[in-house]
Amino acid sequence: MGHYSERIKADKIYRNRNNFVYCRGHGIRLNGLFHGRQKKNDEIDKKTEYKDNAVRIAVERAIILAKQK
Image (cartoon, rainbow, N blue to C red; front, side):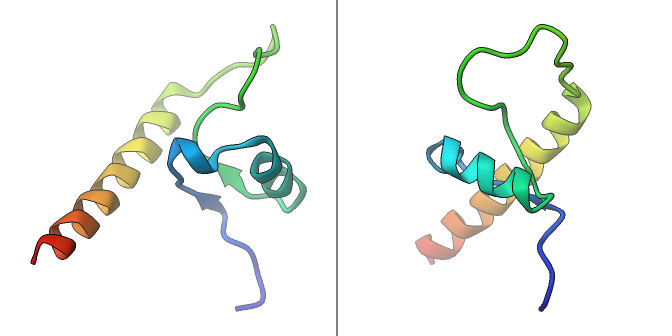
């Protein structure tokens, strides 16, 4: 619709270096941690990570239930 999403909730398999770089370049927040060693002064917002993960799990649950029907 002419703009990028504010955030993306993806499984671990999609949280690779290329996708992190692409999202960072377009101002998109990709849930989860960047792979590799974390920076010393890099703080993690645990509440936001928890909320993002909970929403992602709820969406996946709905998809799995739809597939079973």
